[in-house]
Length: 68
Image (cartoon, rainbow, N blue to C red; front, side, top):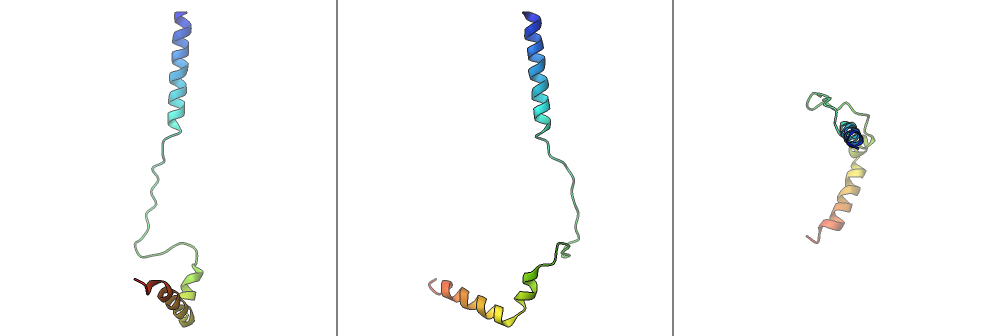
């Protein structure tokens, strides 16, 4: 009886340690230069330069913000 209890306790402790190792997080850090965007090309950047787009955004903004 005592051996079975010790074996069960050891198994539960081993399972607990095994489960807790899955909760750790990697410590890899990626360093970037400030002010330099290295992601994929953003299609909205070119669209924002268009004066028609700016007018449409301003009109949309004024529809909602005039009540404040």
